[in-house]
Length: 541
Image 1 (cartoon, rainbow, N blue to C red):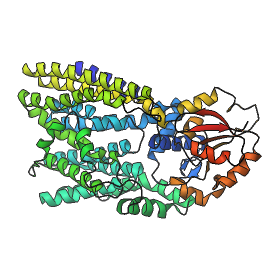
Image 2 (image 1 turned 180 degrees about the vertical axis):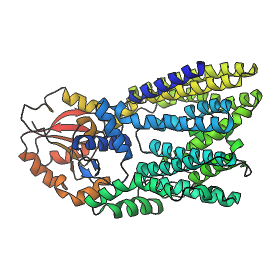
Image 3 (image 1 turned 135 degrees about the horizontal axis):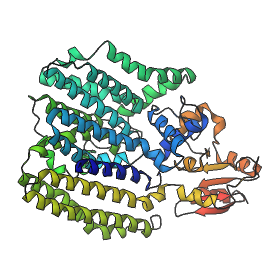
């Protein structure tokens, strides 16, 4: 009963903290805006970002976000609900798999490890596509493990194999063909490594592809019919070109992901040496090892890199770590407490230097709030780690592990919540709140809404908090595809904007100080109605 109560408390805390921060640019604003557009327009086929065609990714995240906002309102919690649930789905799949393969003790250890692994926690509380992809791929990974386990016991693996096919379909709808490449390549390399083809004979080649196609084909067919340019942009530009060609402003060295692996696995990073010795003779450990290595290598070789790309390897690492902690002695676990405790102590030492980095663009208040959150998190973890050390001396390994996991989860969520003040520097939440408090966004019954322009600058969260698109001016970036096909939905030059601004009886514009200076020299009437160190909103008086 105590474990059920603890798990319930963790789930409640996990979900509540989805709302403790404003959405930040760029990813969170982008995906919240895409979901909101589907909800507002009722078009669940053609994604639009700020009113423009946007085909970079599939729609599963957008659908889930739109449904969530439809049920719970347009707010940060509803926008982040799908990644939060995907994190819980990932943990649940791992716990169930550990219980079926290795028993209840390892299942409890798996829950502790997975629910406190930094990269799983952080990405489950951040609105991007990676938590959804990770959950779908974790279902595939676990279904293959359970299928092989069933075959070894002489039972049918049909249900698990079909589950794996369905997981691949959901992974494709989450982030594209990478959802097929990762499990497919892992299966091939793992079979070659073990010189074993047992799974290939039971992959349900008749029904499995039908399940996959039933999940993925309807949207791909409909969006292609309505948008003839979709297929070339999505499959060539967003898959082939993004992986092989530089120029997406996401380049990185081959060792780019190493620090994210070391920090992301905390507080279990010191267990990595256990995982560097693959055991080919046991299917589960060799499968999890190959899964992790392939994901790390695949994205390390890519020309486009972002820290969250390697997230799908962390569930496999969590299972491997939990397997080892369930078998390790209390003395071994005590030694592994040293690394996270020392790192959190170093965080405490570094906090004064963090606050000293305040400048004109990053106010000291934002850094002080973040520093306080980090200090509280560090204090919590170190204090609980001392208690876990004492419990290990008494031989209470599982209890100590639960303490460490709960403390690290709590510390990570404290830091995330404290990040809000700093995150506001990349959010338009307070900007829009201030504008709504004045006359600038007010409109009389029957009056059209005030045009809102984004001139040579754009904040991805702005359309979400405004709850309507803004008109881009002399700004392209990721909007190029949609702008080229719908040129009437944006303004390509400052000269055209000046003409439009003069025609409007009322208007607002988001811009930077440099753009304001350029426009002031053209004789425009501009009144600053909101500003911070980096950006401002001007109105037509």
